[in-house]
Image 1 (spheres, rainbow, N blue to C red):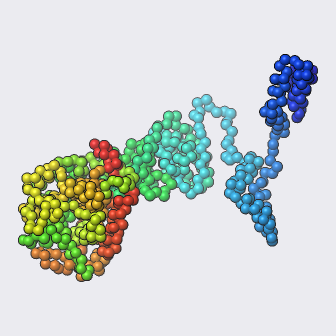
Image 2: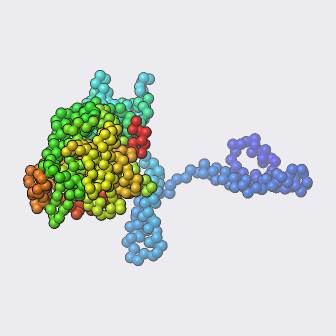
Image 3: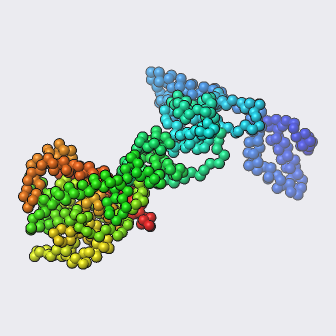
Amino acid sequence: MRQAVEAQVLNPHCELGEHGLRQILTDVIEEVRQSVQQEIDGSELLHSLLNAPWLQSLLKVYECLQRFQRDSPAPALDYASGLSFQLLVDIKSLPGCSDEAKELYRLLRQPHLQALLSAHDTVAQKDYDPVLPPMPDDLPDDEEATRIVCLVKNKQPLGATIKRNDVTGEIFVARVIHGGLADRSGLLHAGDRIVEVNGFPVYGMEPEQVIQVVQARSQGTIMFKVVPITERTVHNKTTLYVRAMADYSPQHDTAIPCADAGMAFRKGDVLEIVDQTDALWWQANKLPSTAACAGLIPSTNLLKRKQREFWWSQPYQPHTCTQTLSTVEEEEDLIAIDEKCVEADEEAFESEELKEEEDDFSSKDGVYFAGFRRSVRLCRRRSRSTGQPSCPCPTSCYSASISPYEEVVRYQRHPQDTHRLIALLGASGVGVNELRRRLMETNPSVFQGAVPHTTRAPKGYEESGREYHFTCREVFDNMVYNNKFLESGEYKGNLYGTSVESVREVLNSGKICVIDIEAHALLAVRTHELRAYVIYVKPPTLERLRETRQDAYITTNYYVNRLFKDEDFQEMEEAARKLESHYSQFFDRVIVNEELQDSCAQLLAAVRKAQDGPQWVPASWIRPAAES
């Protein structure tokens, strides 16, 4: 046995055979056993070691590896998927299948098994694609390193833009669109120089010609020969959610690198910013998103730079304490809205005996009566011309450098938090106050209005804190100066206003505060503390207005009722159009007041959703420090 071992050591390259190593081990064990019988020291330990099961298993594995190293495994068939298909056909054609045949049929139809057989055939047939051409032998020493990029296109956008160097004529990848085919592949990057597309050299071609070459194959394999960029920029792909505060149309923007890659949006749309690498052009999706690729949108800095161009509309700044960025025409339009509202209300409020303390908007047998706390509504619309001190607080109105995007986050009120303020807004006569009154009547223990302040003397039946908070002019003016009011104004020599504290008292009591406001108070209620949910009440079409309000009455001079006239409807529609044009980005919900009963149901559902459902809210409400 020693001779056999010595022979193997001296000639390690001789073949052991399939069982050679195991036979040597057996001889060694026999030798050790004889040594144990002769009581040789250490022999018993060596004997137990060589008989260990793990060593026996290791030797078996070694022998198997040696055997398969000599005889490499080969597939029995290179068409397993075709054979399984034929087997499925044969089983299905059997007149009466056994349970075993049905079970086999079910197993062979499983997608994972079909995929496994297809992969087996690909390996068995060595059908690997694509087959790259061999490197040429006469490659120059100064030849740049190139990369072959193959993308399989299936009627989907490539998701990349290109640009041409006007000096050298070279074509480069300008940007890779998030979510597109090029982005998902990870093979093309901004800055890569394109040499060939599907075998066509692109040097000196115009970008439009290169695009035609790519578009010539709407599906299938597109092969790019590129020179990779040596240094890649760090991509800023931190996701950011914003609400658009302006309209944008890429087709009207001559500065956009690629109009087809742009994404149009309107005021109030929520956008998901997925890439801010480019300082001028961001990549974003409009939520809810169904598109595979993101779209290009102008960055905040670019929109501020372009604020006076026609292809995007700057939101209007209603406060006189800030420098306006809107055009003169926009300013005149908005003033015209207030003038019409004041003119309509002035006719209704010329009576010597005011009835502002009554809920005087009601509906009886389809007859509508306009107005709710008339003096309060009138004075706040006239506040601009009463010499009221301009707003001293820059956080309650737009600044000259207003951002076209408002950062938002997904928010859902915690049951222990105070309720969100419900703010109703609409053109005069559309029915805002009637909807508000009916909502509060549905459940007075849940819904409540804010008690306004006034400087007029209380009447005999009035109590301070119930109908009004009665105060003197000096205190009222001090509250105005310190920005304590959401809205305030003067009428008939008396001051009226709705204070933040009045709203806060209702919310802190656990109730839902419901108020109606004018447009210039929107920013005052959209704060971290009040978190107003703004519901815009929109009039229906002119035809529907004439149909539903043909027997309705409107209050005119000295509270004499008269039927609505056609010009009333036209003024209402025009005022609503301008409200939407300037303020639609602030609307959380729009209710078309076509049928009063249906509108009440929609309002109630909207209020419940505002308190219990998730909404997009300004990020500053959740992170107040961001307001600095």
